[in-house]
Amino acid sequence: MNATMRRVVIGTAAVSMALSVAACGKAGDDKKSDSSSSSSSGGKTIGLLLPDSVTARYEKFDHPYFEAQVKSLCADCTVDYANAAGDAAKQAQQVSTMVTKGVKVIVISAQDSAAIKSSIDAAVAKGVKVVAYDRLAQGKVSAYVSFDNVKVGELQGQALLDALGSKATTKSKVVMINGDDADPNAAQFKSGAHKALDGKVDIAYEQSGLWKDTVAAQKVKAAITQLGAKNIAGVYSANDGMAGGIATTLKGAGISGIPLTGQDAELAGIQRIVAGTQSSTVYKAFKPEADAAATIAVDLLQGKSIDSLATSTQTSGSGDKVPSQLLTPVSVTKANIKDTVIKDGLYTVSDICTSEFAKACKAAGLQ
Figure 1: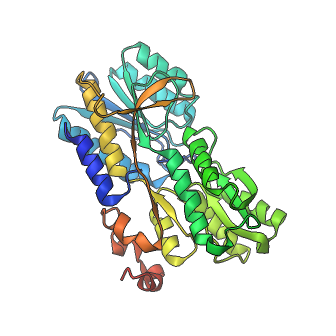
Figure 2: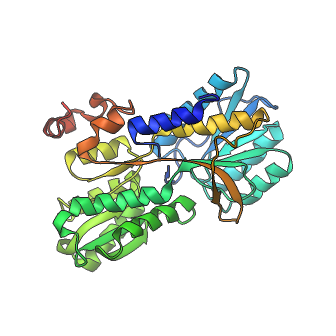
Protein backbone atom coordinates (compact mmCIF):
# COMPACT_ATOMS: atom_id res chain seq x y z
CA MET A 1 0.00 0.00 0.00
CA ASN A 2 1.03 3.61 -0.59
CA ALA A 3 -0.99 6.79 -0.20
CA THR A 4 -4.06 4.79 -1.19
CA MET A 5 -3.47 2.19 1.51
CA ARG A 6 -6.50 3.08 3.52
CA ARG A 7 -8.86 2.61 0.61
CA VAL A 8 -7.18 -0.67 -0.26
CA VAL A 9 -7.60 -1.96 3.29
CA ILE A 10 -11.27 -1.00 3.25
CA GLY A 11 -11.65 -2.70 -0.10
CA THR A 12 -9.97 -5.82 1.18
CA ALA A 13 -12.31 -5.86 4.13
CA ALA A 14 -15.30 -5.72 1.82
CA VAL A 15 -13.97 -8.53 -0.30
CA SER A 16 -12.73 -10.88 2.41
CA MET A 17 -14.80 -9.70 5.40
CA ALA A 18 -11.74 -10.59 7.29
CA LEU A 19 -9.40 -7.83 8.30
CA SER A 20 -8.40 -8.98 11.85
CA VAL A 21 -3.82 -11.18 16.23
CA ALA A 22 -3.38 -12.54 19.41
CA ALA A 23 -3.42 -12.85 18.50
CA CYS A 24 -3.38 -12.84 18.53
CA GLY A 25 -2.26 -14.62 21.18
CA LYS A 26 1.16 -15.35 22.52
CA ALA A 27 3.00 -18.50 23.35
CA GLY A 28 6.08 -19.70 25.09
CA ASP A 29 9.64 -20.24 23.98
CA ASP A 30 10.50 -21.94 20.73
CA LYS A 31 13.44 -23.31 18.82
CA LYS A 32 13.50 -20.27 16.54
CA SER A 33 14.67 -17.79 19.13
CA ASP A 34 15.87 -14.86 17.08
CA SER A 35 16.52 -13.80 13.55
CA SER A 36 17.36 -10.65 11.69
CA SER A 37 16.61 -9.63 8.12
CA SER A 38 19.22 -6.89 8.16
CA SER A 39 21.98 -5.63 10.34
CA SER A 40 21.83 -2.20 8.70
CA SER A 41 21.80 0.81 10.97
CA GLY A 42 20.69 4.38 10.59
CA GLY A 43 17.64 6.31 9.57
CA LYS A 44 16.60 4.08 6.65
CA THR A 45 16.03 1.04 8.85
CA ILE A 46 12.70 0.02 10.37
CA GLY A 47 12.72 -2.45 13.24
CA LEU A 48 10.17 -5.25 13.53
CA LEU A 49 9.91 -7.11 16.85
CA LEU A 50 7.49 -10.02 17.12
CA PRO A 51 6.71 -11.88 20.35
CA ASP A 52 7.13 -15.60 19.66
CA SER A 53 7.78 -18.26 17.07
CA VAL A 54 5.23 -20.75 18.34
CA THR A 55 2.19 -18.88 17.04
CA ALA A 56 2.34 -19.83 13.36
CA ARG A 57 1.28 -16.49 11.92
CA TYR A 58 4.29 -14.41 12.96
CA GLU A 59 7.04 -16.19 11.05
CA LYS A 60 4.89 -17.42 8.17
CA PHE A 61 2.84 -14.29 7.46
CA ASP A 62 3.41 -11.13 9.52
CA HIS A 63 7.17 -10.92 9.05
CA PRO A 64 7.35 -11.52 5.28
CA TYR A 65 4.25 -9.42 4.52
CA PHE A 66 5.60 -6.52 6.58
CA GLU A 67 9.02 -6.63 4.98
CA ALA A 68 7.59 -6.83 1.46
CA GLN A 69 5.35 -3.82 2.05
CA VAL A 70 8.19 -1.72 3.47
CA LYS A 71 10.36 -2.49 0.46
CA SER A 72 7.52 -1.68 -1.94
CA LEU A 73 7.09 1.76 -0.36
CA CYS A 74 10.73 2.64 0.28
CA ALA A 75 13.30 1.14 -2.08
CA ASP A 76 16.29 2.07 0.06
CA CYS A 77 14.71 1.06 3.39
CA THR A 78 15.65 -2.13 5.22
CA VAL A 79 13.88 -4.10 7.93
CA ASP A 80 15.77 -5.24 11.01
CA TYR A 81 13.78 -8.18 12.40
CA ALA A 82 13.95 -10.07 15.68
CA ASN A 83 11.68 -12.50 17.50
CA ALA A 84 11.47 -12.62 21.30
CA ALA A 85 10.74 -16.37 21.41
CA GLY A 86 8.27 -15.83 24.24
CA ASP A 87 10.81 -14.02 26.43
CA ALA A 88 9.82 -10.50 27.61
CA ALA A 89 13.34 -9.73 28.87
CA LYS A 90 14.79 -10.74 25.54
CA GLN A 91 12.39 -8.44 23.72
CA ALA A 92 13.39 -5.54 25.96
CA GLN A 93 17.02 -6.18 25.01
CA GLN A 94 16.05 -6.28 21.34
CA VAL A 95 14.52 -2.81 21.65
CA SER A 96 17.71 -1.53 23.25
CA THR A 97 19.86 -3.12 20.56
CA MET A 98 17.84 -1.49 17.79
CA VAL A 99 18.09 1.91 19.45
CA THR A 100 21.86 1.47 19.69
CA LYS A 101 21.99 0.62 15.98
CA GLY A 102 20.26 3.89 15.20
CA VAL A 103 16.91 2.46 14.07
CA LYS A 104 14.42 5.35 13.94
CA VAL A 105 11.10 3.48 13.82
CA ILE A 106 10.33 0.25 15.70
CA VAL A 107 7.19 -1.79 15.13
CA ILE A 108 6.58 -4.10 18.07
CA SER A 109 4.08 -6.78 19.02
CA ALA A 110 4.74 -6.93 22.75
CA GLN A 111 5.40 -10.20 24.50
CA ASP A 112 4.32 -8.44 27.69
CA SER A 113 2.62 -5.10 27.13
CA ALA A 114 3.36 -3.75 30.61
CA ALA A 115 6.90 -5.08 30.96
CA ILE A 116 7.99 -3.45 27.69
CA LYS A 117 6.87 0.06 28.75
CA SER A 118 10.21 1.24 30.16
CA SER A 119 12.05 0.06 27.04
CA ILE A 120 9.61 1.83 24.76
CA ASP A 121 9.79 5.06 26.75
CA ALA A 122 13.60 4.90 26.73
CA ALA A 123 13.56 4.49 22.95
CA VAL A 124 11.10 7.36 22.48
CA ALA A 125 13.29 9.58 24.68
CA LYS A 126 16.06 9.06 22.12
CA GLY A 127 13.86 10.11 19.23
CA VAL A 128 12.61 6.70 18.09
CA LYS A 129 9.04 6.33 16.88
CA VAL A 130 7.32 3.17 18.14
CA VAL A 131 4.31 1.50 16.51
CA ALA A 132 2.37 -1.08 18.55
CA TYR A 133 1.45 -4.00 16.32
CA ASP A 134 -1.47 -6.32 17.05
CA ARG A 135 -1.11 -5.75 20.82
CA LEU A 136 -1.32 -2.30 22.40
CA ALA A 137 1.94 -1.94 24.28
CA GLN A 138 2.16 0.50 27.15
CA GLY A 139 4.29 3.61 26.87
CA LYS A 140 4.60 6.54 24.50
CA VAL A 141 3.85 4.75 21.25
CA SER A 142 3.08 6.81 18.16
CA ALA A 143 0.48 4.51 16.61
CA TYR A 144 -1.32 1.21 17.03
CA VAL A 145 -2.41 -1.22 14.29
CA SER A 146 -4.64 -4.14 15.16
CA PHE A 147 -8.15 -5.49 14.90
CA ASP A 148 -11.27 -4.67 16.84
CA ASN A 149 -10.48 -7.13 19.60
CA VAL A 150 -13.76 -6.75 21.49
CA LYS A 151 -15.47 -7.63 18.22
CA VAL A 152 -13.26 -10.72 17.97
CA GLY A 153 -14.59 -11.91 21.34
CA GLU A 154 -18.16 -11.14 20.33
CA LEU A 155 -17.75 -13.16 17.14
CA GLN A 156 -16.34 -16.07 19.12
CA GLY A 157 -19.16 -15.96 21.64
CA GLN A 158 -21.85 -15.66 18.98
CA ALA A 159 -20.33 -18.53 16.99
CA LEU A 160 -20.52 -20.68 20.11
CA LEU A 161 -24.17 -19.78 20.60
CA ASP A 162 -24.94 -20.44 16.95
CA ALA A 163 -23.28 -23.85 17.17
CA LEU A 164 -25.23 -24.69 20.31
CA GLY A 165 -28.50 -23.80 18.59
CA SER A 166 -31.47 -24.79 20.71
CA LYS A 167 -29.08 -25.95 23.45
CA ALA A 168 -28.04 -22.35 24.10
CA THR A 169 -29.91 -21.95 27.38
CA THR A 170 -29.03 -20.64 30.82
CA LYS A 171 -28.80 -24.27 31.96
CA SER A 172 -26.11 -25.15 29.42
CA LYS A 173 -22.66 -25.25 31.04
CA VAL A 174 -19.88 -23.63 29.06
CA VAL A 175 -16.16 -23.73 29.81
CA MET A 176 -14.15 -20.56 29.03
CA ILE A 177 -10.40 -20.70 28.44
CA ASN A 178 -9.09 -17.17 28.03
CA GLY A 179 -5.71 -15.85 26.89
CA ASP A 180 -2.80 -14.57 28.94
CA ASP A 181 -3.47 -11.55 31.12
CA ALA A 182 -0.07 -10.13 30.12
CA ASP A 183 -1.52 -9.62 26.64
CA PRO A 184 -3.97 -6.68 26.66
CA ASN A 185 -5.84 -8.24 23.74
CA ALA A 186 -6.82 -11.16 25.97
CA ALA A 187 -8.93 -8.93 28.19
CA GLN A 188 -10.68 -7.49 25.13
CA PHE A 189 -11.41 -10.92 23.68
CA LYS A 190 -12.77 -11.98 27.06
CA SER A 191 -14.91 -8.84 27.34
CA GLY A 192 -16.42 -9.36 23.91
CA ALA A 193 -17.10 -13.03 24.56
CA HIS A 194 -18.86 -12.27 27.83
CA LYS A 195 -20.91 -9.62 26.04
CA ALA A 196 -22.21 -12.32 23.71
CA LEU A 197 -22.55 -15.17 26.21
CA ASP A 198 -23.62 -13.64 29.53
CA GLY A 199 -27.25 -14.35 30.34
CA LYS A 200 -27.56 -16.86 27.51
CA VAL A 201 -25.53 -19.80 28.87
CA ASP A 202 -24.04 -20.81 32.20
CA ILE A 203 -20.31 -20.06 32.21
CA ALA A 204 -19.56 -22.77 34.74
CA TYR A 205 -15.77 -22.75 34.57
CA GLU A 206 -13.40 -19.97 33.47
CA GLN A 207 -9.61 -19.90 33.53
CA SER A 208 -6.62 -18.52 31.62
CA GLY A 209 -4.84 -20.89 29.28
CA LEU A 210 -1.86 -18.52 28.92
CA TRP A 211 -2.02 -18.95 25.12
CA LYS A 212 -0.47 -22.41 25.60
CA ASP A 213 -2.07 -25.61 24.34
CA THR A 214 -0.68 -27.61 27.25
CA VAL A 215 -2.05 -25.22 29.88
CA ALA A 216 -5.43 -25.03 28.14
CA ALA A 217 -5.58 -28.82 28.05
CA GLN A 218 -4.88 -29.00 31.79
CA LYS A 219 -7.59 -26.43 32.54
CA VAL A 220 -10.19 -28.27 30.49
CA LYS A 221 -9.24 -31.55 32.13
CA ALA A 222 -9.89 -29.88 35.49
CA ALA A 223 -13.21 -28.54 34.21
CA ILE A 224 -14.26 -32.04 33.13
CA THR A 225 -13.41 -33.37 36.58
CA GLN A 226 -15.34 -30.57 38.25
CA LEU A 227 -18.40 -30.47 36.03
CA GLY A 228 -18.61 -33.97 34.58
CA ALA A 229 -18.01 -34.88 30.93
CA LYS A 230 -21.72 -35.17 30.14
CA ASN A 231 -22.48 -31.73 31.56
CA ILE A 232 -20.26 -29.62 29.31
CA ALA A 233 -22.23 -28.11 26.43
CA GLY A 234 -19.40 -26.19 24.78
CA VAL A 235 -15.94 -24.71 25.19
CA TYR A 236 -14.80 -21.17 24.45
CA SER A 237 -11.12 -21.11 23.52
CA ALA A 238 -9.59 -17.70 22.88
CA ASN A 239 -7.33 -18.96 20.08
CA ASP A 240 -6.63 -21.92 17.82
CA GLY A 241 -3.39 -22.86 19.54
CA MET A 242 -5.18 -23.54 22.81
CA ALA A 243 -8.09 -25.13 20.94
CA GLY A 244 -5.69 -27.80 19.69
CA GLY A 245 -4.85 -28.90 23.22
CA ILE A 246 -8.50 -28.66 24.26
CA ALA A 247 -9.70 -30.78 21.34
CA THR A 248 -7.24 -33.52 22.29
CA THR A 249 -8.42 -33.42 25.91
CA LEU A 250 -12.08 -33.57 24.92
CA LYS A 251 -11.42 -36.56 22.67
CA GLY A 252 -9.54 -38.31 25.46
CA ALA A 253 -12.50 -37.80 27.78
CA GLY A 254 -14.91 -39.23 25.23
CA ILE A 255 -16.52 -35.86 24.56
CA SER A 256 -17.48 -35.17 20.95
CA GLY A 257 -19.89 -33.04 18.98
CA ILE A 258 -19.76 -29.98 21.23
CA PRO A 259 -18.83 -26.48 20.02
CA LEU A 260 -15.22 -25.34 20.42
CA THR A 261 -14.16 -21.86 19.33
CA GLY A 262 -10.78 -20.50 18.29
CA GLN A 263 -9.00 -17.54 16.70
CA ASP A 264 -6.26 -16.82 14.13
CA ALA A 265 -7.50 -19.18 11.38
CA GLU A 266 -4.42 -21.36 11.82
CA LEU A 267 -4.21 -24.22 9.34
CA ALA A 268 -4.63 -26.80 12.12
CA GLY A 269 -7.70 -24.92 13.33
CA ILE A 270 -9.25 -24.88 9.87
CA GLN A 271 -8.57 -28.61 9.54
CA ARG A 272 -10.25 -29.27 12.89
CA ILE A 273 -13.26 -27.29 11.69
CA VAL A 274 -13.42 -29.46 8.57
CA ALA A 275 -13.11 -32.58 10.71
CA GLY A 276 -15.76 -31.39 13.17
CA THR A 277 -13.56 -31.23 16.29
CA GLN A 278 -13.61 -27.42 16.32
CA SER A 279 -16.67 -25.41 15.39
CA SER A 280 -15.26 -21.97 14.53
CA THR A 281 -12.29 -19.65 14.43
CA VAL A 282 -11.84 -15.94 13.83
CA TYR A 283 -9.97 -14.85 10.72
CA LYS A 284 -7.88 -11.73 11.02
CA ALA A 285 -6.30 -11.21 7.63
CA PHE A 286 -2.58 -10.92 8.26
CA LYS A 287 -1.55 -9.13 5.07
CA PRO A 288 -3.78 -6.04 5.49
CA GLU A 289 -2.62 -5.73 9.10
CA ALA A 290 1.05 -6.07 8.20
CA ASP A 291 0.62 -3.73 5.24
CA ALA A 292 -1.06 -1.11 7.42
CA ALA A 293 1.70 -1.25 10.03
CA ALA A 294 4.42 -1.07 7.38
CA THR A 295 2.76 1.92 5.71
CA ILE A 296 2.48 3.80 9.00
CA ALA A 297 6.10 2.93 9.83
CA VAL A 298 7.39 4.24 6.50
CA ASP A 299 5.33 7.43 6.84
CA LEU A 300 6.73 8.02 10.33
CA LEU A 301 10.25 7.37 9.05
CA GLN A 302 9.73 9.92 6.30
CA GLY A 303 8.17 12.49 8.60
CA LYS A 304 4.71 12.28 7.06
CA SER A 305 1.39 12.64 8.86
CA ILE A 306 -0.45 9.42 9.75
CA ASP A 307 -3.73 11.16 10.57
CA SER A 308 -5.50 9.74 7.51
CA LEU A 309 -4.42 6.21 8.45
CA ALA A 310 -4.82 6.09 12.23
CA THR A 311 -8.34 7.48 12.42
CA SER A 312 -9.39 6.25 15.85
CA THR A 313 -7.90 6.37 19.34
CA GLN A 314 -7.25 3.61 21.85
CA THR A 315 -6.13 4.02 25.45
CA SER A 316 -3.30 1.76 26.57
CA GLY A 317 -2.81 0.19 29.98
CA SER A 318 -0.48 3.06 30.87
CA GLY A 319 -3.23 5.58 30.13
CA ASP A 320 -1.69 6.85 26.90
CA LYS A 321 -4.10 7.73 24.13
CA VAL A 322 -2.77 6.24 20.92
CA PRO A 323 -3.78 7.02 17.31
CA SER A 324 -5.03 3.69 15.99
CA GLN A 325 -6.06 1.83 12.89
CA LEU A 326 -8.41 -1.05 13.69
CA LEU A 327 -9.31 -3.63 11.08
CA THR A 328 -12.38 -5.87 10.97
CA PRO A 329 -12.33 -9.60 11.83
CA VAL A 330 -14.69 -12.29 10.53
CA SER A 331 -15.97 -15.54 11.99
CA VAL A 332 -15.10 -18.71 10.08
CA THR A 333 -17.10 -21.93 10.22
CA LYS A 334 -17.23 -24.93 7.91
CA ALA A 335 -19.81 -23.06 5.83
CA ASN A 336 -17.57 -20.17 4.78
CA ILE A 337 -14.04 -21.60 4.59
CA LYS A 338 -14.16 -21.26 0.79
CA ASP A 339 -15.27 -17.63 0.97
CA THR A 340 -12.64 -16.52 3.49
CA VAL A 341 -9.26 -18.19 3.95
CA ILE A 342 -9.31 -20.00 0.59
CA LYS A 343 -10.68 -17.04 -1.37
CA ASP A 344 -8.04 -14.74 0.14
CA GLY A 345 -5.28 -17.19 -0.73
CA LEU A 346 -4.27 -17.81 2.86
CA TYR A 347 -4.54 -21.55 2.22
CA THR A 348 -5.26 -23.68 -0.80
CA VAL A 349 -7.64 -26.62 -0.79
CA SER A 350 -4.62 -28.92 -0.98
CA ASP A 351 -3.11 -27.24 2.09
CA ILE A 352 -6.22 -28.05 4.08
CA CYS A 353 -7.27 -31.32 2.51
CA THR A 354 -4.33 -33.58 3.20
CA SER A 355 -4.92 -37.33 3.18
CA GLU A 356 -5.97 -37.26 6.83
CA PHE A 357 -8.77 -34.81 6.05
CA ALA A 358 -9.69 -35.91 2.51
CA LYS A 359 -12.94 -37.59 3.48
CA ALA A 360 -14.02 -34.72 5.73
CA CYS A 361 -13.11 -32.20 3.02
CA LYS A 362 -15.25 -34.02 0.48
CA ALA A 363 -18.19 -34.00 2.91
CA ALA A 364 -17.63 -30.28 3.47
CA GLY A 365 -17.65 -29.57 -0.26
CA LEU A 366 -14.00 -28.58 -0.43
CA GLN A 367 -13.02 -31.30 -2.92
